[in-house]
Image 1 (cartoon, one colour):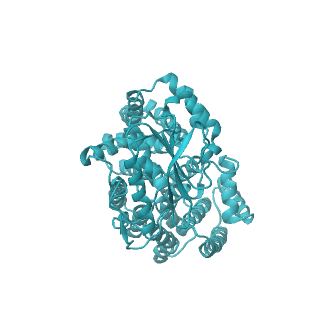
Image 2: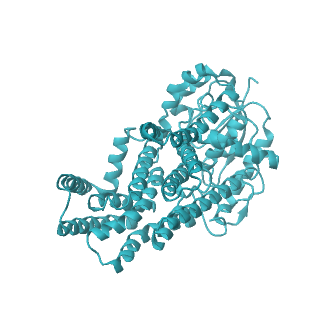
Image 3: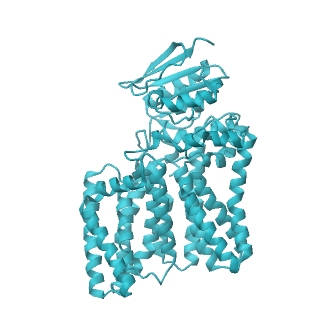
Length: 532
């Protein structure tokens, strides 16, 4: 996976994650100048960007550095989790499969720093620390503090997790009223340490409380990151229909009825457990097989297996092991929070679904015991269910490359700009080199608006729009007007427009100064303000 870090260029999502850090490093104030709803992670991480620029003298090669850092974090987390599970007596097979899933999972095959992956890694560490804390008395206070810090970091990556954080704080306070006062204090200190840093960054960048509340409505309205209906219920409904069609609701209904019966009667007969297990397993095999044959998104298999594990909860031994309950619950919460935060709920939600699968690996063994499977077949049963997800997860990370072609040896190496050191196709290399050349022709001061986020990273100009994630003034006219009414000085010196779908509305007189046509694709048009 470190080798793959050198392959391919993603000028969309991956560059945007770095551009937010770049923007704050340039002096733009979080929330006031940037209105993207999931920007808080960049506030936490932008000191790393500043450190890189300080050490290297520029941001050349920053994309590759971000990938190597993310892979290093993933590897370290995998080693930590493997060691904790080993100490907790988890079987070797389960430890290996859980570690493989954690090590090779990447949302959309994006290798760099992203709020998806940082939230995913942080929440896994919270769960691992919570489990380890119960197994040892050594460094207990340190683990409690770190648990609070990593939980708040996950919330910073996805603010929709704040409800979960609030409930966790309330539970911690209620528990601490009776005992363990120091644990509560340390846990809250871990949480508020990140909040304090966010406040320091905002005020150090010139923000005020009055300005912050003035832009809160804009932070909550982001039509470029919505889908039809723009509600959690709608996204879940569309997702279930896409994967399982109408008969999926019959399966869900059966699971609910079995759970109600178990709560009422406390016990289900062995015969009925086996029948329920057989029906759910047969149905999931059909859905998974159909998905593998028809879908071009291999990550969907992660959703299907996670859904399968949730449906098996009614016949699992809930009293034997609390670990998988906490992990599956956290995964479901993270999945739903990313449904709300992203305009690509299938891809984004997989960050939570993979955690559900990790918890399901532990739960599935107890399910097999409940239906009285012979002990010698327990490991085989776990392996048969987990193996497809492990294969898909590894394939997704190794063989896919978001927004670029992939092979183990792309022919052209980029020698300039933030993408320096990456290998790509000849056409993409020409495009990146043109961005470097164009950035050199522009002035060092002023503002830029473009729908090519790599140019924001390459040029010295600051972003002149409410967000670097921007789909054209025509689609966001009201937000653009509001932004420039608050910050008229941020109207851009240059506009670089790419593609027919991005019709940039004129708000002053412009002169076209250059153009670049990609082979067989749309054209870049470069405009400069004439009234400067």
